[in-house]
Amino acid sequence: MKKWTKAIAAVAAGAMLIPLAACGSTRGGSGSSGAKDASDVNIGISMPEQMLERWKIDGNNLKKQLEGYGYKVTLQYADGKTDLQTSQIQNMANNGMDYVVVASIDGTATGAACEQAKANGAKIIAYDRLIMNTDAVDYYATFSLEDVGKMQGEYIEKALGLKDGKKGPFNVELMAGSPTDNNAAYYFKGAWSVLGKYYKSGVLQAKSGKVPSDETQWQSIGIDNWDRQKAQNEMENRINSFYNDGTKLDAVLAQNDAEALGTVNAVEGAGWNYYPIITGQDAEKANVQAIVKGKQSQTVYKDTRELAKATAKMIKDLVDGKKPEAKDTFNNGTKDVPSQLLTPVSVDKTNLEKVLVDGGYISAKDAGLE
Image 1 (cartoon, one colour):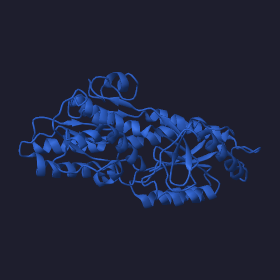
Image 2 (tube, one colour):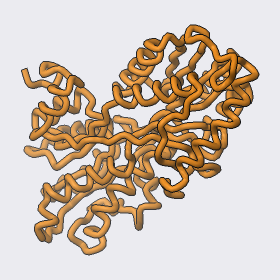
Image 3 (cartoon, one colour):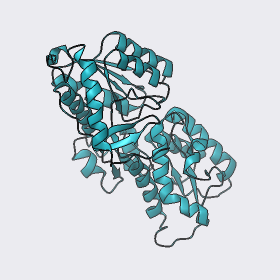
Image 4 (cartoon, rainbow, N blue to C red):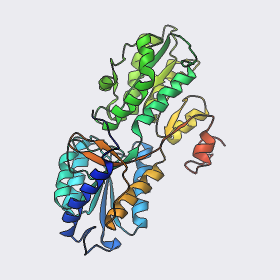
């Protein structure tokens, strides 16, 4: 996995604007003397699914932001099916969309459809998940991915007192994200940068033996499609095989809230009188409530309202013939994609109300505080 670098961001972003203006000019798009009125700008949004609460929120937020600029917006969800998402993107291309925003189910599988949309004159924005192995993607908007995993790892590190010299050994089971999600590699890399040394020294162990040899082997513990039930099944198998003899499970690295909730369900099914430390990501309503109740320990909050604003602003800048903000780059295997990275926040009981409720992301009632 190639690392993103900041050094060439300005050059890459500037270079991308030349072909963008050229293909847009054939259709009166952005960057041309015959720029479209806002009401004539057509934008397609392809979200991966609606089962996870966050994608419904993302889709609606982004649609609202773009419509606020006066653009025509088509929002579609792919129900977790790669073939359906490919078909939806192809239809967007055939319907003459000026911009296509894609949150990929499979970052590699969507490449061909994005190339078709690009060939038809559209600009492609990768949303939250990078589109891989193609030069069709123009910009990428996401959060600082490694920081997400690092925050999860640091939470476990602090909760177990590892920095204070506690030797354990502690039983910590690991789960990574979907093997088809490019972001999952970065999440695990961040977590492993904190926890890896403790496994190597023997302070941490996993009775299941499911510990990758290094950060590059994360797919061996990946949960397909970030599926809650699959995560629950996985943890039930590990608990029944290794922890139902009185052996304590100290912590679980769950890398999103679906995996975290699956872990909570597995623990409750085992009938234990305690919950291990359980991390997460996305601050979904059910998980926030689980944190309030002491079932889940932590989640990483990514304010998708801000991600929607940043993505919409990228498109507005392109429509207006301006250079979007993209100070960083991610390499997708073919090119360094100009990228804008937002900052995530680690949330637990101590700051949940201040960050999520006072910040307007969730009501006190929905958080389970009333």
